[in-house]
Length: 226
DNA sequence: CATTGATCATGG
DNA sequence: CCATGATCAATG
Image (cartoon, rainbow, N blue to C red; front, side, top):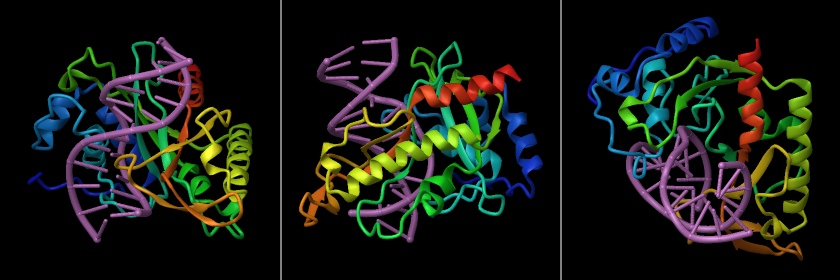
């Protein structure tokens, strides 16, 4: 990408207005504006859509462990949706800590921080639609409601309890009502350290927290209702 | 057809 | 390896 990136928005309202300005455009149009060529599909470019919208919105790019809009404390998430407006995929939130868990509580958890304020941007995601022809939808600036946070917290605490007890390898994606713990790695050979059943260090797959589609569907639906 | 385990690219 | 951005694709 040789063109200059857009400047970061200086306020929440500016970010939201800029995001609303992207609604209705196709990814092909937005790619052209960014001086990019859309890949034929996302098989080898899974993060392409997210990075394209980051460029348009002036996100603080890079792989830093900070929100996309650090000054505003806002995280950007693109979400692939069906014709009916329902999410087609779970949403990755962050890597799950598997060691050094002393003193880690929901209140000071990385995941709570990441989900405190999220700019959701729905994008048509069905594979029948060529990537360049997929439309960007209306953005939603979201913070968890009291009920949503309570559900997230319950799942997080259940999962973290299992991790602390050395049962990480017994956790499946079925645990949790709204939050899942699943592998998050380049491949199944990547290993990281975790607690074993006897408190002994073991090597296991890195895991990430993901929001289930039913949960994100509710967020979007709540938005459509308003 | 939703779910779940596996995987792809990039930068530090 | 870990963080960022996620989707793929086999399976129940």
